[in-house]
Length: 418
Ligand code: ATP
Ligand code: MG
Image (cartoon, rainbow, N blue to C red; front, side):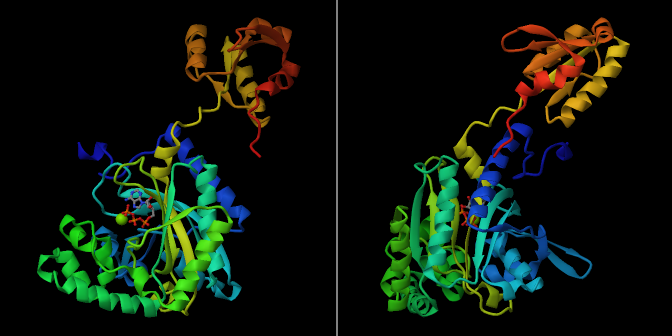
């Protein structure tokens, strides 16, 4: 029955997988907070305009990937990305008076794409946004932050930073003219999408995934040759800043970003370990975004990283924490075990209390949950005020008085993370 499978392109995240997600999220949140980025959550759906006005009417996202629906008189869309919602939130909450602002976010995004390895219809991102900083130092900080997160995840030598400049609007206009002249020569041979892009946003042809388009893209004029002096200086400052931090960056003159609101710096951290879906973290400067939303001009730069792609790279999940199993034998012992388990949990120990069954089946359960120790309490022991504690790795068993049980078991407490 169709309702027994998840919707195509979506997935359940089970506990083992969840620990990997948590590691990515916690690492990103922790590093971001060291750079002064506070966490923000925006709603999972917004008015469709928030995305359609900003991402560009010829972008892949707006033309085919948005999950949109109507409710009452509202036209709504499940967020395909995080930046537009954050910009909207800054305006809704009157936060522009506090610029510059730094935000970290995490959560699900939705795009109607062809599902494949590393590409889902519901996927998850961590991301950061730096708002109100027009200086290239902002670009350097944001890229360094992305690099730092990847390094802390142990991926420092598995990813490459590619970077390009889209220049300011004057440079992009000059480039746009050159591109129109160039692609017009092959107009009839371009894909239907790219014919439309030629009129509306020729830069986007460079990002086309169509094989036929790609061969014309290969010889297209380079954006770098159209940068004016101010844009070139800006880009050089970013590159020098990265070099000063020891972050190596490969200039890729063909790198463009798929969305309309970008200017100046565009960058991606890529890996060759994930096949075609090799971009793990991508971002850029989006100084035009707020105006597209009908707000005042506000500089911005940020990135987003795909959690699924990162979890595929960081590999094995940490083992689940090992609990202490309590095995009561007899009615009185069972009643006492409930209370003992609860006390130990309040003392920050992980406890697995079997719900019923024989001694044998309860010991089996202790093995199954990989208990680190088992506390066996029979009615006789209970009368004497003791329990038998078995260390499951050494097999050693000791009688411990119930009064000292918590103290004795403290050795099994998982150390609090710093
Ligand atoms: P791509 O070229 O792979 O489609 P994109 O340019 O659409 O990427 P962004 O909008 O920049 O991607 O999103 C940032 C990151 O989010 C990507 O680098 C990737 O890691 C992740 N991501 C994007 N779309 C998906 C998806 N459908 N499934 C899983 N991860 C995704
Ligand atoms: Mg995409």
